[in-house]
Amino acid sequence: MQAVILAGGLATRLGSLAKTTPKSLVSVAGRPFLEHQLALLKRAGFTEVLLCIGYLGEQIRDFAGDGARFGLRLSYAEDGERPLGTAGALRQALASLAPEFLVTYGDSYLPFDYAAPLRDLLAHPEASGTMAVYQNRGRFDASNTEVRDERVVRYEKGSRDAALDHIDYGATALHRDVIAALEPGLVTGFDRVQTELARAGTLRALIVTERFYEIGSPEGLAELERLLTQ
Image (cartoon, rainbow, N blue to C red; front, side):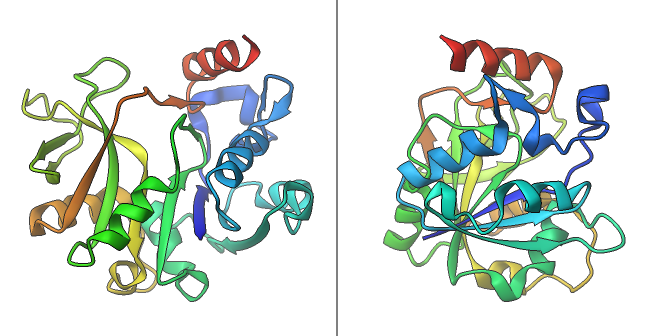
C-alpha cells in the first residue's frame, strides 16, 4: 500500500518555529513530527510512502532518507521552482503514484486506521475516492462537509451552513486517474479535487469517531504535545 504525505507547505502559522525547519520536522514530544506520522502509517500496514516536498524539503530528505530505519520505503516528489498547491503537488508526482493510494497532510496526526479509506475505496470501485470525515460541528475547526448515505454530497470551505456538520479528517483514498485528469503544472489546492468529486457524487465518506490532531498552528501543536506526552 502507498501513502502520500503532502509536506511542502510554508507553515506560516507556526511563525519562528518553522522559519528554518520544515513543519514535518518540528519537534513533538521529543521527536520530529514526521517520525510520529511514519509510525502510524507503518502500524496500519503501509509499506511505501511518497513525500511531496517543497519548502526546506532537502531537510526532510536528509532526515528520512530511504525510510529503511522506519521499516518503510520512502520516495520524494518536489514542487520545483514554485509552490504548486496540494493538488498541484500530486499532479507533479503523477508518475510515482500507485493506481490507488492514500493522501494525507504533512501536519495531520490521525489516531485511526490509515488503511481504512483505501480498503473502502477498493471495495467500491464505482467511487473515485473515499474521504475520512469526522462529525466536527465546528468544534476543532470550521466544518466543511455534508454527508448523506455514505457519500460526501458537498464539500465547501468557509461556509456557515449548518448542513456542513462534518470535516475532512485528513486522509483520502483516491484512484490515480483522478489526479491524471488535472492539467500539468496546475497550481491549486486539494480542496478543489474534493469539491468536484463531491459534486459528481463519486466521493465516499468514511466516518471516524476519534477526533483529529494537527500541528499547523501553535495551539494544535500544544494539544498534540499534551496527548503524546501523557
